[in-house]
Image (cartoon, rainbow, N blue to C red; front, top):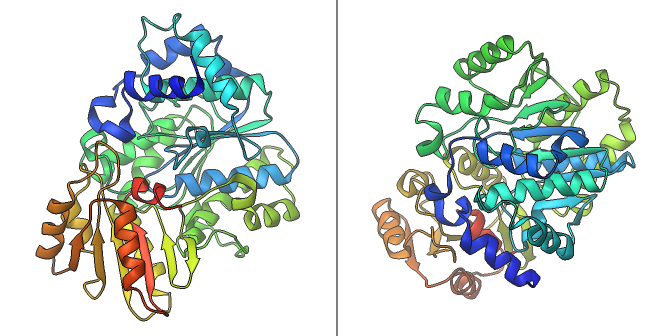
Length: 405
């Protein structure tokens, strides 16, 4: 088996939520528990920080990793989905897991786990935990994939749990009410393990507070804290909220005995991209015309993205936009500015939303635009139409952004 064949096996033979959606969802942790037992429970061999939330959990995870890297220790980072390279999901001090390690891991265990039939996500979680254990990381930042309570990563007993915020996403799995979604995310709260909540409405706060009390877990609400703002290489106004969540987390960890100096924190925020390789968060792809890509893809994420967009200075706005079919395209397009020109497209994944249906919804919402057969074609058309001083925004889905960054 080659590395390419190994990835083909992982993608095609096993369910993967990011590509096929609901069919990949497994509503229990039995597979993960059985799989990790075969591996000797590697998740018990390293300290971790567990991060969940509707929006911002990727940025928060990368910020935390960057700060810890500045302290000079070995830092594991597990996130999903990836943009262009599968190995982006598993990193050690910003370096992707070697192809050979991925290949050896699958080859070594493919027969032993046959009866379990792990999903794609279960495979990758097990791979990450095995790698971090093997590399003897000092701490690993672990981002949940979907939800919290039944997420494959939720076998950890971390140093601290972090929940960034709660919004409307993945409702078919997590519930339609924000309180239901919050309860699922709160499933990562562990007995006697401190938890930090980034931002939450009063009713949501009560859900978190109740579950934290039941677990005797000390709880901190980041939005109740005031901190000086640190310079960041991550742009986008929404990153200030994520920074506050990280600062609250670091304060709790300091009390637990972690030596995190002012210099480490300052340099960590200043070098998130260079330390961790994070992409797709208000990422400037070109200056003339100005092209910006962002992975915001649900109602709350798009609203925060639009606030940052409003702060930009430009003449005309061109929007390259595509989504996947489990999102409420009408609700989200209803938030978008009607003065822009739209270049609708479909990301190259099975879940991609039919571009002509997307165009129809957009026109019904009063938007002006055309449909294109690919993300690349849509972006090229936007570039051809844009004049100096215009702005091209690329977004709507992680998978659209993945094709341009």
